[in-house]
Amino acid sequence: MAKSIVGVDIGSATIRAVEVQDASRPKPTIVRFAEVPVPEGATRQGEVVEPNTVAGAIRQLWSIGRFRSKDVVLGMGNQRVLSRDLTVPRASLAQIRESLPFQVQDMLPVPVGDAILDFYPTSEGIGDGGPTVSGLLIAAVKDAVLANVRAVQAAGLNPVGVDLIPFALARVLAPADQRGTVAIVECGGNTTTVVVVTNGVPKFVRIIPTGGDDVTRLLAGRLGIEEPAAEAVKRHLGMDLSAARTSDDALAVAVVRETAGELMASLRNTISYFVNTHADEPVDAVLLAGAGAALPGFAEALQESTRLPVRHGAPFASVSLAKSVRVEDLHAHGPSIAVAWSLAAGGKAA
Image (cartoon, rainbow, N blue to C red; front, side, top):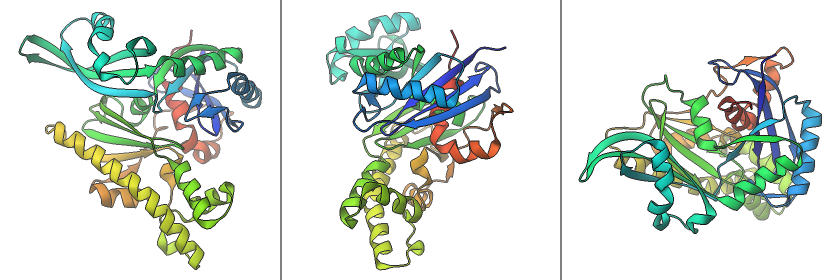
């Protein structure tokens, strides 16, 4: 039997996992997936703060999901990860990576010794000093990465990789054979990620510290209800004023629109910044991902704000399903497990 690998997405309220066979083939096979809630306070914006508690939840996840592989790929994509444009003298990728600590200290909010650095080349050119390589500097706070790694190790699993969530999503939503430039917007609980991809190559990444949980909290406070009830109201009404039947409904929609409107402005400004700095790569469309993007009226509002075509991405377009996975279950859970699937799809079993 072919080896399988599991993508693990540790969120603020839920841990999700997707097991994939033949991850390196053009059409991998999803063999199982599952999710479990995270005890309150055990994680913070996707970062593990109580390793033993999270390890216990992961063991429960493996039991419920009946996962057979212990090889896992973890994702990072919160405010403890940053991406910056960087141009360096042309050299081998190994040499560029080795030189990063000496070149990027002024670009980091933490000492270079406290960060894990990587470089993702996107193009070559000629500068004043000769040939250059341009790309994305990726820097993650070391303690944040290690906390997540230690939690899965404590659960008895083998972390074979840590991937940047925007890059993982780009692989399944805008593969290399797709021409043109698209902006992928992934709406999570605490963060919203934007990755702009041209001809399958990620060119720009921004992580906005606003997500669906912010809308839920404000809604709960304004309406004087508990957060679970506010979450249900948010998912039912969203930004769609036509769905409001009472004055309370209208108030709820107004609150959602207020908070989501701030996010819309950030997304519009982010995409505009890319367009203004990459004049030869105009954005053709926006692809939505993540459970937060299913908010009623969100896609329509974003299309109006950005004046770009907005559609929901199809992360499972190039996937096979094992006989044990029902298509209707994948459709029902697709928005929430897309990140875990994308992590597994780019992974390599040990």
